[in-house]
Image (cartoon, rainbow, N blue to C red):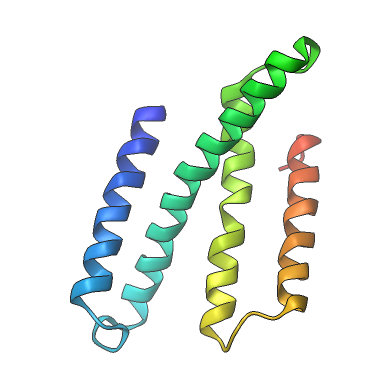
Length: 121
């Protein structure tokens, strides 16, 4: 699973950069913009899973009772945490990001992380 995530993340990053340099949003259309945001999500999932894995491994070294199934936890939390930058970028494309929108995205992330911690999501 790690190799597939790394492959999709790297491929998405390369395709996304190519789209940014060679195509304008007017030329690509709504479907292209949706594909762009999907690839952006894959890139952030890879980064978030890596960050969560680092966090959980460091926490496991500090507290041996909390060490358990780091891979599974990092995938679940990474998928949830990767939504925040994409949502903020979408909000920014509609006219800017305000403090209220940042607070709402933060509240959404807290609720989703709570649901993941209770094995509901």
